[in-house]
Length: 466
Image (cartoon, rainbow, N blue to C red; front, top):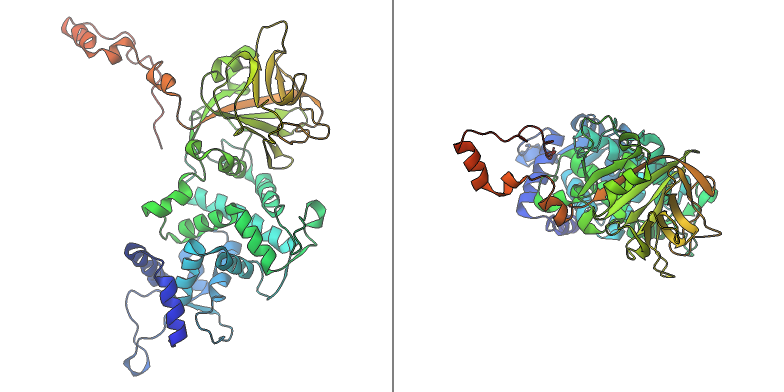
């Protein structure tokens, strides 16, 4: 190893803590099929390397083959010496360490260089179609590895929509943030033919944090490296929220795994760890009164609607719903679309018409709304359950959202509401406890006189964490 090679290697090596280095060494030993130094010519330690077939044998079915090859290509592209080396079909330990350090702990420039090599083996520019293919591979591999490692946190492919359309939708959303070298944004049908250089890709990786976050999880879970260390576990901790309230219900959500991950990334950080189903029209009935009974005073929540034309959309309410004739909520609220496209629409600051909920009043609109104004909401569910509208010509003034439903006035096909974060204190302190739960003396007195608790065994047990 030359001096320049040693300097670069040591620089990247120093980014890891001692226990992280032990984990990195262990994975490379497993990859190379060696647990100690291998003696070469003249008694010197031989350079240990990993081939693609060795890498695939280690990863097995944890990642799709296409992503396994992309990761290996990224490792092969690492130059550990200032003097360019010829092409090789093997990866040395120095390359492996530098790759891991750059991807997991590096700067945007370092990460974007690796992403470029994972997209194309050729130097220079890449086509938008290649970036889109990479993004689909990225999202698909994320879903695949989380399922394979049983890290879906209560979600599964049986209680959510088929992820295939969602993978394409999320990939398209990520790539829609691409900008050309002159700063112009590439959108829609122009994306596949766009030509992006290194600076465009670096800007994309910098502005779209999901690219780095998803790659981190794919590497950690795919190679089983650093995924269990406390500071690295944060990468997967809130990528998907823990799903509560649907066990053994036969319920199938309007959302898929990619859309859950994308929407969760836009929620306030303090509520990303847990989603709890409050209401589903197919479980609780198609009734506005039932809807109110399940969502009022339950804390921040997500509403997800499907209209009769198949469009899926909704909104995030940043505070508890309260039935009153005034607007409520704050600038953390947003509207979103899931299908046919995946997008989030945040507040413009034009007005404070974030949330509205009113019932059984003759002088004010009765229903649930978000954005816009009375009779012209960005999202509206009428108290005459089953009717709604999404009015935006050309955009909702509160959220800058387009018309979310297929028709301006729509018929509601299904609705579900998810509470996010921990339940409000008032909700956790009451409701599930009887007077005997909070008064042990009364319980002891019953036991002394030989009486049993009449409610024992009748109350629904709390759902435990998986």
